[in-house]
Image (tube, rainbow, N blue to C red; front, side, top):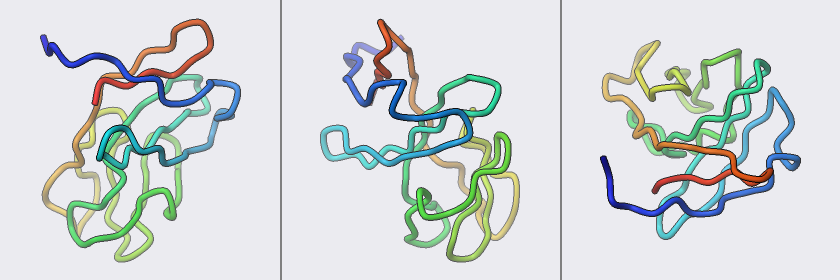
Length: 105
């Protein structure tokens, strides 16, 4: 278990289901994703293959697709789902408290 605190990131109402948005927590660019099934996830916003902002890509269900070379990742875990990436995105624990998204970053 991590001793890092959860940081306030965004109001849940500001991130509709099926949307994603980058926030900066400390020095970390974090991609918040609200999937259509109502779950909220957080992964690093920079592609692990080549420098590209993942929030400029596309969201397809639980898959985020990099805008630069088309690498894809599972937003729930950061796992690589499609080449050319071979390294997963960092994934962050998320919780929703009183309508606020909080991330342990």
